[in-house]
Image (cartoon, rainbow, N blue to C red):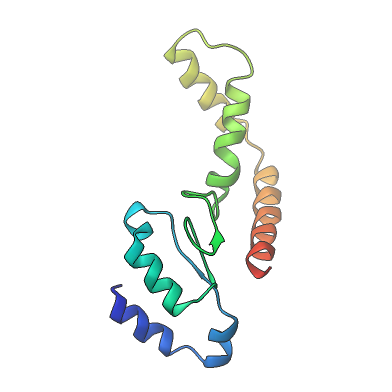
Length: 123
């Protein structure tokens, strides 16, 4: 969506919603240019979340899926509990840990983290 399309989109949002609305920018490098920051500052003054925004958000932050904010760190902790001897052992450990994942654990992490992140956005 280019600048004009985005502006048209924003202008069609009810004013009472826009007044309280924040915009979250993703961490893609082209989206962190001065031109993009200036544009967002104009449209959402002090009310946008991004890598270099008034509300800081780390680049490539783990913000939406359990794979991002939980699974990779969990697997890494499990797989590297003891030293590895070779690539084959690494592959086997990753496979074994994936097979051993508890669905209930993933559900609880997903719900807890989603609520936490939604609360953070509201704040």
